[in-house]
Image 1: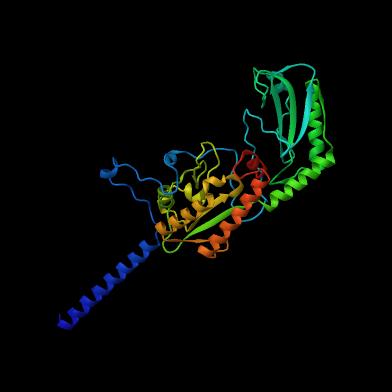
Image 2: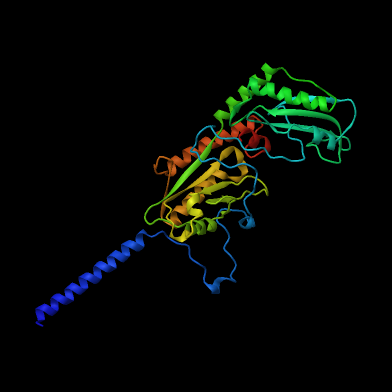
Length: 361
């Protein structure tokens, strides 16, 4: 074999190896980034503090409140209502409910009240409540077995994200309350329907103007992510596993309260047989503004979370249309939210309160 032939063989081999290496590099580049296991030597080391949470919050699981923040982008209303939070304490209020006092002929037991309650706790799309005045404490509360009550009251919510209470719903409410009153040998004092419907429309108009759900899209800039890779980096900034597949939450300071933020990605990816081979190119960071107390600094933490995750995972932050969100846009959104918080507080419906969460459900 001549020197020329040998040289050509060597050059050909080098070219083939270069092509193979290039193809492998391209293939690896397009594989989803995977989560990394911590080395065994680091298992006993103390975990780093989450970047965005108060001390001790990283171990909390997602609060379950019967409500799920909706995927939306700085828009008003239009969401399916979630069931209201049920507790033993009183929740009926003239601010949010049409009230019907029920005058009793005698003290009644909580068991009798529970047996006489309507089969459903809804009137159309609105939650329906009955409360009793405890004979021992004098406090209004959700009726309980083993207690005795000197008075009762029923109420239906005037408005929620499904709209205001209308004439048909009010009429259904009257029928339900009258049947309950008859069973309890009580006298019901109904308010004027047109007046309550007018109150409902006014409250709904206020809620529509001051409702906001924000969603930032975090999009991969180069290589895609695996669900484990995304979850690992989200956990590093304070998110914990949510109640549903493809969902993580940033818990609030108050146990049992609404999460400050929700991170959501494709459910099918979360349920894949081999999640590490599943490709994710984006996820959502969501804030349901009326549900989170102002003192939690929710928008500040949304910005921090979005920025931190984008830097860690080589991503970019955009709105729903794919437009990059820069500092100026973020500042304008933050200023608008401060005005929204002020308006809610002026109406005595501060963000994160039980009443506000009921209205915006």
